[in-house]
Length: 120
Image (cartoon, rainbow, N blue to C red; front, side, top):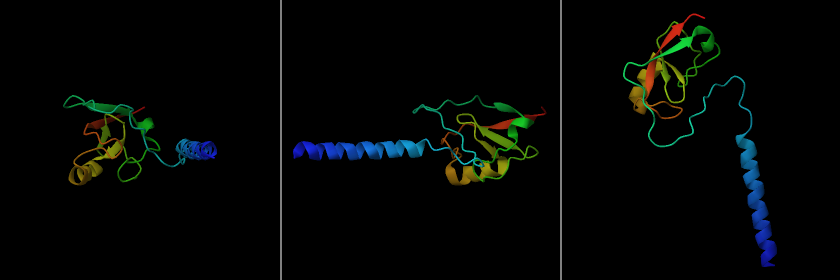
């Protein structure tokens, strides 16, 4: 009786674990942009002061602000997280400074740097 109970409990945990794995690997909705955070934990790499990200205008097509979900407008000042590469409008970063300690909403990094948009 004890062996069958242990088998049933183990089988239940195995099915639960498999269900969680399947739900985590489900494809993301096509209209959503959520960059993956990096795999390391601990000290986050910080960019040098004055770092600027160079991004082609064509790479911004279809991207959304990670904080406000507004479509990225290359004409506005932009900032990018150096850890997870999430993109923000400057107005969103001002709100992050006020409400979130200036941390990225995706990976909680403070490495937010200006973006220069190049044609191409």
